[in-house]
Each structure stands twice: as C-alpha cells, then as structure tokens.
Image (cartoon, rainbow, N blue to C red; front, side):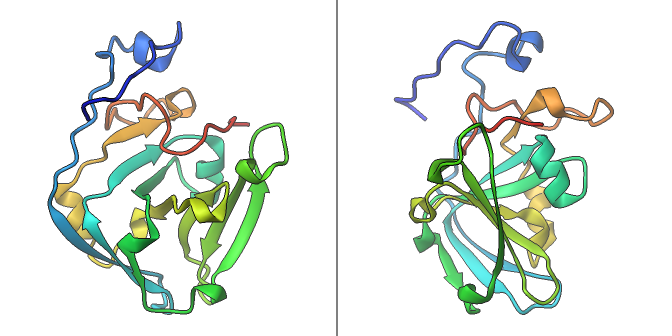
Length: 183
C-alpha cells in the first residue's frame, strides 16, 4: 500500500460524513496464495482463481442491484487473466453489454457474463476486454465458507446503499473499476 496517493475527500462525501480516517483504511493484501473454485448453478461454467487473495468489494450502485436482483453486488476483483484457469469454453458464455456514463465509448461499456444454460451471473468486465479486470460474483464460489474468514475490503456507492443495511467495510477511496453514474 505504500506509494499510493489519495486525494482529499470531496466535501460532503460519504467518507467525510462518516468521519472515517483519510486515506481510507483498506486491509493490506496478504501475500497468501489461494486457490478458489468458482462454478455456476448447473456446473457447466467453472474455473479456478489462483494467486494472491483478491480484493473483495461490495457495490451499492443501481446497476449492481439490478444485475444481482438484490440490495448490492459482492465481488472478487481479479486484475489479471493469469490468475484464472477456466475448465469450460469461455466463448460459450453469454454476455450482456451496456453503457455507463454519458458517452458511448469502449471505456464506458460494461459486460455481464452468464452461464448459457442456467444464466448464473459469473463476472462483470468494464471497458476494454484486454484490460483483464474482472469482478467475479462471490455467489459463484464453490466453497462459500471461504467468505467466513475473508470479510469485504471495501464498499462503494455508499450514497445508494439501503439505509437498513449494516456498515460492512470501509468505503473505498476510489472504485476498483472506472466510476459510473448510478441512475
């Protein structure tokens, strides 16, 4: 985490209103090697995430609520394809693409990838597909007990969070993916 420069919080931001420390305290990544199996409901889509423990992020934006059909999205951020070993033909994954923000550019497109059989959402990518940044739905973990020992690292779009949800993790200084406007 050393070497990171955090801009001051925007006046009236969630971080400032909650009186949280600045820069926000995000747990340092443990250099522990992991191997996490992911799969869809019907097991047609499966992969292994390996390498360092990924950042776990909760997002309260409107789009994540719609995509998940719930109150928020909960994701593991994978920054590099080399952290993945697929055991299925990824060309078969069904993708739904939509634009976020004002401009319809390659950097403002989001892709939601689902199993073609059971339609389980597997991951989201934003922007250039070669950027290798993917947000995997934690609900796809084959062994959900891993989550018992790994709390989320950050929450984003706190202004869109349902008021009755508890405070789970520190708000993020910046979203691990490009900002988008919630509708």
